[in-house]
Structures are given as structure tokens and as C-alpha cells.
Amino acid sequence: MKMFWVVWAVVGIVVWIVMNTWLTGQKDMWWASLIATLVGTWLGDFLLGDWAWMLAGFNVIAGIIGGVVFNWLWGLLRKQSS
Image 1: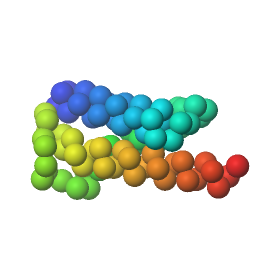
Image 2: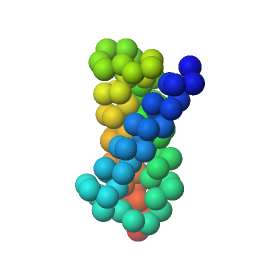
Image 3: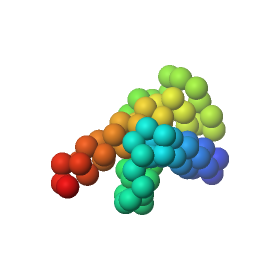
Image 4: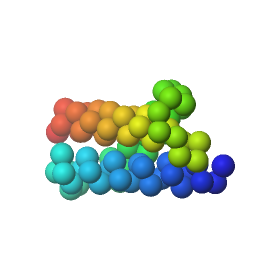
């Protein structure tokens, strides 16, 4: 069970780094973006179930999908508020 959380954190941080530096270029409010991405990776694994690449009980592909979606949604909400 401990490895699940390690894999979750690593996948979430990698997705966050890729989304923030490479795709969106957001430099400010990084902590909120990180939290949104981590929540998305967890929900992606939880909601999409065990159907793809599993590592220590964590669905890596579903986590990536969830992290990307939540990071993207956070970016949209941030743009609307400014």
C-alpha cells in the first residue's frame, strides 16, 4: 500500500512538470496547479479502475489522464478569473 502512494506522487509530479513547463508555461500559482494535478491523478486512478498499466496497484495511464484533465481545467479556471 505504501508503494501505491509513492507511484501516485511520482506520476502526479511528472504530469505537473510536463503540463506546467512544457505545455502551459505557467510559472505562478504553481502550488495550486500541483494540488489540482495530484487530485486529478488520484481521481483518474479511482474512477477509471484497473484496466491499463498497473504499477503497485496504481493505474498509471488513468492517473496521467486524470492529472492532465485537472491541470487543464485549473488553467481554464485561472484564465477566466484574471
